[in-house]
Length: 154
Image (cartoon, rainbow, N blue to C red; front, side, top):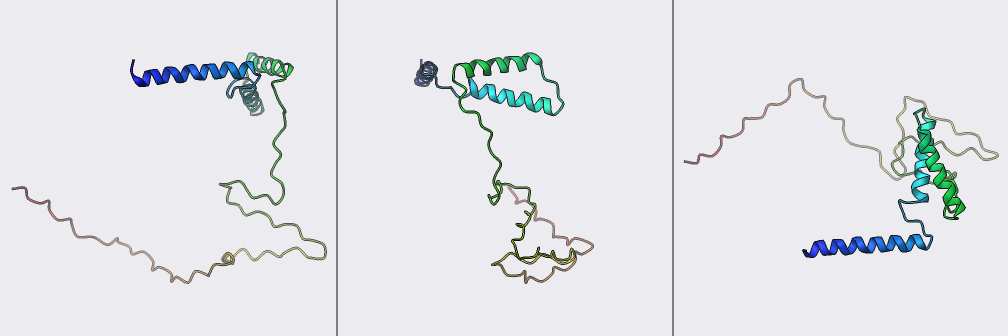
């Protein structure tokens, strides 16, 4: 048996012992128990909400698992993640759409939007683009001279 085979066997043995110890201590092992059952319930709910067929046996299996975990006290706290609050930064990789300005405060009027034909001003702290316009493209692309012949190996 090579060194790597012995190391792999020892790692598998250690992982099995850790799983047994965590299960006996009542700790949910990731990918097993509550996490997996709640994920499966989410998948079933999504399938049902989008009009796709859901196997009743799968639904009953997941619900039975969740009932058992809850009766054993291993389900934990169930809360829904709240939506981001007003003024929170947008999530990374946003849709690129500009957000709406905040509502006007008392004693102020709503801002007037510029005409649609005028370009947007540059962002604060940046200079306007002073580069000249490029000439229009020519009808025929410029031709380059042919490449030189390959070297002679003679």
